[in-house]
Image: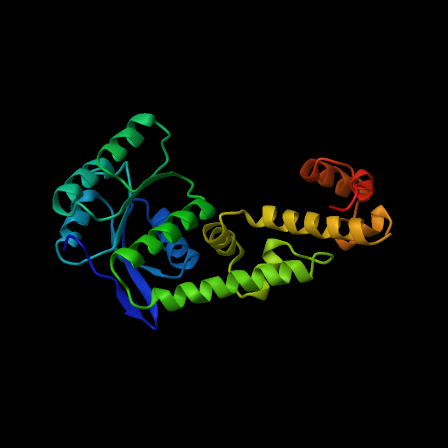
Length: 258
């Protein structure tokens, strides 16, 4: 059971999660978050402390262990230490309401995959789960991720096309995510993983590229260029343009064509 295998359902690599948390309300909230953030994880085992978690691990395979630190009978660090002796390669995510560096240091010493503070941030958890899924897909040679990755690439290409074609309209992340039928937080993480660039930075880069084109090849007024690039305020547009292009729009327009 050192390397639990993922199962494939409906062409998607699904991964099983054990959640160890002694506070029921937090446990329920985390379960919902885990299963909704990425959609490729399901919580198949839950325990209130480390001893119960170890008993469950002996009976069933999981692909990821997520555990709190402070719990009765056996805390998360002790659980992690035992898990490393039994299943050295099992990914373990530590969550804690304590910023004490001692806990984080102990977690890293026993090769925790990551350490996230409570209250758990959806973006931070999404980023961890997405990266872990990519790693598990590679390591365990799941056959379907090639098709899934192709679908993700197609989604990102569609997002880019939407942004470029709608720069003078609403290209907010929630609106674009709705067009491609994705949760906007998931899309934010997916876009960064696939392109290496934040979505907002990509939008700004597209707006600046369009602005340069309009300034070079048209005689539109600055406020008209601003509107066509998605800026309601000409002053805001000019400030952003100068920051990104090193010159005022009027100065850029006077530059000789290369």
